[in-house]
Length: 159
Image 1 (cartoon, one colour):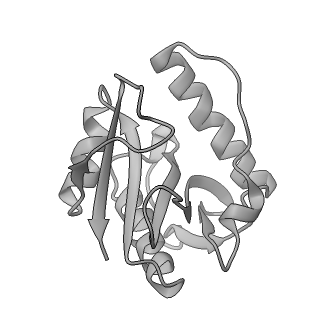
Image 2 (image 1 turned 135 degrees about the vertical axis):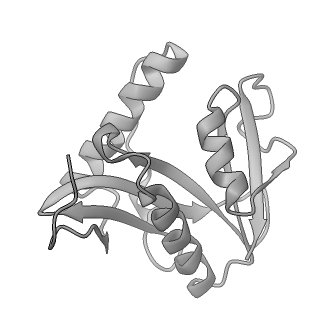
C-alpha cells in the first residue's frame, strides 16, 4: 500500500465500542494471541474510555480504519492514564502512525487532567518497547494486574 495524495491518515475520537474500534481491537487480540498463545477477546470497558475518564482514537485513511489506541484511568497510579489497545494494521506499520496515535493520546490525557501515562507491553515485543522508549517512556515496576507476569514490562512517562 502506498500513501497517495489525499490519503493522509486522520485521527478521530470514537467510542471504544464503535464497529471500527472493535474490529481493530479484535485484530490486535488475534495477533497477540498468536504471539503469546492465548485465545479469547474481551472488549475494552466502554465507560473507562469515554470523557471525562478516557478516550479512544481510530486512524482512518480513505475511509479505512488502520490504527487505534486508547487511554483510561490507571487505578494503581494516581493521576495516570493507561495507554491501551495500541495497534496498527500490518500494511501500515513503520510509517509513524503509532507515534501519531501515542502523541494524540498523550494530548488527550493532558486535556483530561492526567499528569502521566503508563502502559504494559510484552517483554518479547522489542519493537513496541523501542517505540515507547523513543517517545520518552521509561521502565517502571509492574502494576496490577501484571504483578505476577514474567512476560510483561510496564513503562511510564510524565506529561
